[in-house]
Length: 119
Image 1: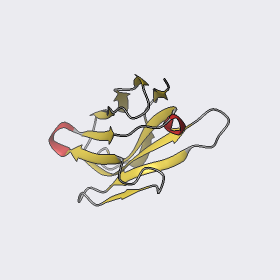
Image 2: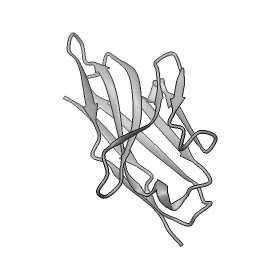
Image 3: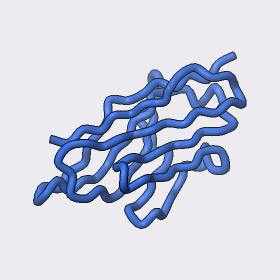
């Protein structure tokens, strides 16, 4: 059984920063690509950032220059550093990881963490 648990969300003022974490646990042989997604009320879930197991990163245009994705393979954890936050960044943030759990390869989602940017 593999679990992803996000943390670090909360309420922050515009211009502020938050750091999200996503920790994977369970029967894990290898973690491949990991992505952060977000879903605002009434909108579709959208991709925010991804990082490969080689460390290659990509970002949505809306967050380039403000968000940074990173990973600590020893801790099976991925981070999303969010700076210069805007009200339009308000959403539930989810991580998704492609994981080999020893002969079984699948994608897993976390439960999400709420980020609210408001004065």
